[in-house]
Image (cartoon, rainbow, N blue to C red):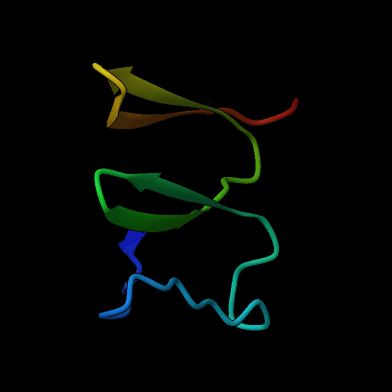
Length: 63
């Protein structure tokens, strides 16, 4: 996951042409991170007291 910059005025600006085809955006505690979704995986977001604590990927492959 990569951090995303927030402007001094608190605005979040993303160029959708530069984003991966499938991605996710997580906003928590004034921080923003973006990540590319894996081809085959179960993705879970773990929270603690209303804050994002961890993002887990359980990757697999179709047989």
